[in-house]
Length: 125
Figure (cartoon, rainbow, N blue to C red):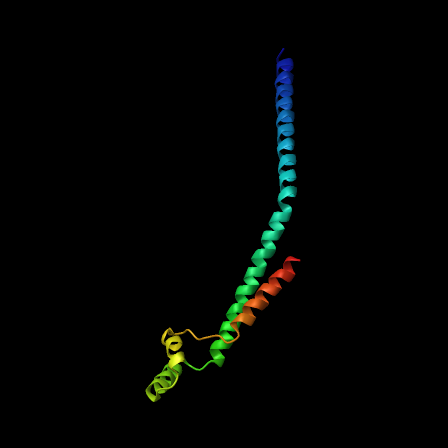
């Protein structure tokens, strides 16, 4: 009688294990199908993150290069004050008055922005 009872318990546990394995298999298959569906979205997001990282690094490098090329802000303010004292540069005065410490005007900004958007369009295609 005891061996039959032990065999019945083992059979019940095996049936329970098989049922759990089937449920788990169904869930894994659903997960894999969902992952296959969102793979293009994840790839696009990953490439967008890479592109934005590269763009930020390029902008930092350009900013550092411009800061090295441009004269100091104090020198520009002195030149503006000198031109104001001489009575020249009236149209330029309003533009230079708004300079902030560490901020320098970037020549060719429109070309820089246009190039950025051209590169972005090329990468999307």
